[in-house]
Length: 500
Image (cartoon, rainbow, N blue to C red; front, top):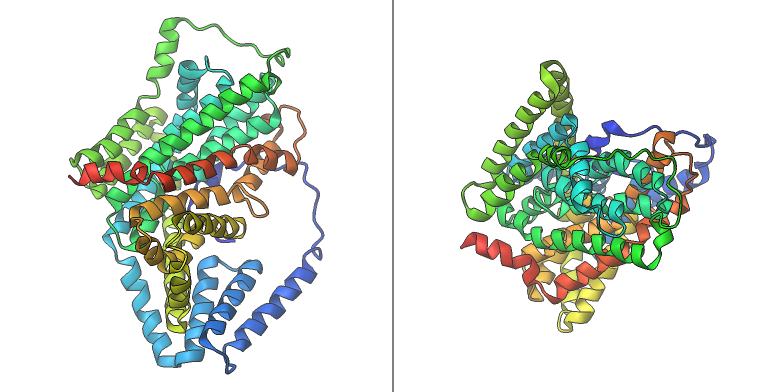
C-alpha cells in the first residue's frame, strides 16, 4: 500500500534470496476485478442514491485503487475529489483542492517531523545500533532468555532516538536474529523478539506517528509525545517479561540443554565491559534532551528536535569521519525529504477524503451510532479494539490514523477519554496492525530479512514461522491496550505533570 514514512530507513534492506519468481500473469484476475470495482464505484457517485451510500461507494473506490497499487494518499484524494464533484460540482472541488494543502500542512506541529526523521537516519548511519545492542547485552543478558530480553530493551532504547518501527526492525534484525540462532534459540522466538522490539519505537518519544496524529488532530505535539512514554515502557516491560516466562517454561526455546552452534564467545574483563557500555552514551544523552527537555519544560518540542538533529549529526561526524559523514548526510537528507513528502501527501489526501465524509453525512452517522455505545464503556472500548484490529489487518498505519481520526475522535472524547489517550491507543493499535495477517507489513519485512544467509545462519524460515513469532507478542500488546483503557492515567499522568 502506501509508502510509510518508516520506509525512509529501508536503505539497509537485506537481500531476499531464494524466493521463487512469480508469473507476471499471476495477479491478473484480481487486478481485473479491482479495475471493474473501481469503475463501478466511481460511476455510482453519479447515480441518484443516498449520500450515506455514496460515502460507502467512496470507501470502496479508495480500497479498489489501493489494491491496484496506487499511492494511498492519491487514492484517498482522488476518491474524495470525485465524490465531492459528483455531489457539489466543479467549484467546491477546486476550492477544496486549493485550500486543503495549505490549511492542513502549514502547521507548526509538522516542523519537528523532518528533524526527527533526519536524527534517526543520522544515528542509523553512525552505527549506534551495534553499540547499543552490545551494551544492553552486557547489562541484561543475565536474565532468563537474555538475548530475547536484550533485543526488546535495545529496541526501547533505539526507539527513543529514532521514532521508526521499520528502522528499529532492520537495525536490530541484522544483529539479533543471527545471534539468537547461534545460541540455539527457537527461530520463532528469535524473529518475533525483533519484530516486537520494532513496535516500541512509535510510542516512546520521538514517535513520528505521534507527531502526525497531533498535527492532524490539531493538539499540542509536546504533551502528545510524552503521553506515549509510560505505555511504551510498559509495553517494553511486557515483552521482556514474556521472554523471561518463555525461557522458564520452555527452556529449549532459548537454547538450554542444547550445544551452542559453534559460537566462540570471548571472555571480557570488567574494564572492557565498562567501555562497551560507555560506548552507547549518545542514546541516554538524546533521551535526556528529548524526554527531559519536554517533561521539564526547558525546551519546546521544536527546540528538542533541532538540538537532537544537530547532536546526531555531530556524533555521526565524530564516529565516521568527514568523508563517510558527507555521504551519510546526503543520504539522510534525501531520506528526510522523501519521507516527509510522503507523509504530507498522505495528510492532504486524507483531508480531502474527510471533507467528503463530512459532506455525505457519514461522519455524523458514525458518531451518532457510536455514541449509543459510549454508555457502556466496556462495550465501547471493545468495539474500538475490534474496529482497529480489523483495519490494521488491511490498511497502512498512517492511512488508518488519518482516515479515522476525524470520525472517531469526537466520539472518544464524548465517552470521557482525552484526545491524548486516543492518540496513544490509536498508535498502539496501528503497531499491532503491522504484526497481524494478512497484510502485516512488518512480518513481511522480517521474512525478507531471514532469507539472507548471513542472518538465518543456515536455518530455513517459512512465512508461517515469522507470523507465529510475531503472534507470540501480539496478545501482550493487546493487554497493554486494555490496561490503558482501564487506567487512562498511564497515558495522561506524565503530560499533566509536564503542563504544570
